[in-house]
Amino acid sequence: MAPVRVPPGPTAVAGGTAELLADADRDGSWLLMVNDTPQSHVDLEDPAHLEFEYVRRMGHVLDLAAEPGAPLDVVHLGGGALTLPRYVATTRPGSRQRVAEFDQPLTDLVRGHLPLPRNARIRVRAADAREALESMHAASADAVVTDVFAGARTPAHLTTVEFAAEVARVLRPGGVYAANVADGPPLRFARAQVATLRTAFRHVCLLAEPGTLRGRRFGNMVAVASDADLPLAALSRACARDPMPSRVVDGADLDRFTGTAQPVHDAGATPSPEPPEGVFSR
Image (cartoon, rainbow, N blue to C red; front, side, top):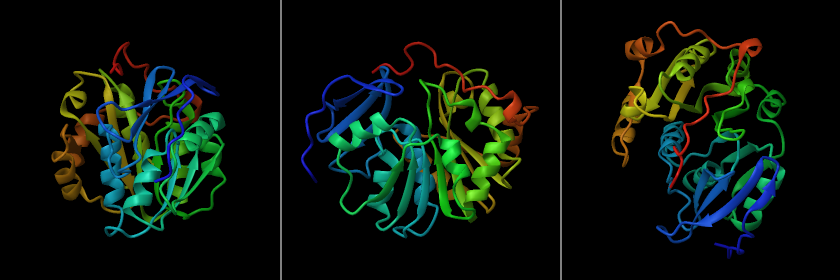
């Protein structure tokens, strides 16, 4: 591993102010803060370690996207500190990964101070996530991951039927999509996101911590979608083993969760809800 240059402290980026903080609880680990909100966690000594619970759930999805260790073509919409690209590069050597991260100064900060794993095939493009996706060839990815924030909210144009159709177009047959869905009571946004994904994919499930799923607290859920059967049993086992176990909601349970929620179209889209004050405090 290349030596880490001492980060410069609070740094102006396109989205406001970013800072890299050493994790006092884990040697070799760093936390990326953007506007005082934790955005990414990276363990340079063990890139396969995923600290954030929802990112760990996304890791499970990628683990089950193909045979263990087999390389994948992955599109990451949202880069941050490149946590999941590092994870895939380590767990699936030889994978080709494309990252769309709008904030070029943020990417420069991360790449200048947190070196990527050796031989990682990670290409980062400074672009809006949807514009980058629309420029990609059809059937060119095995997996697409969306984890994009403007401030602490997912931009509206990444929550719609039209966007989901673009994800489906870029995925190969059998490919899988995973999206961070941040919501709190009464979970209107999450329900609408499930309805939206169902317009583009035959199979959809939701990975969520029970308290968040019951509308008791704000949290990050992971929506998973594919045109092929999802590995529900394996996902359930992986999520149950996590330090903060989560449920896999599918089938009739997902029908009940979604209820009468309607798909979201570009014309009426809004960003994800603003998190309550203090929800991300450490």
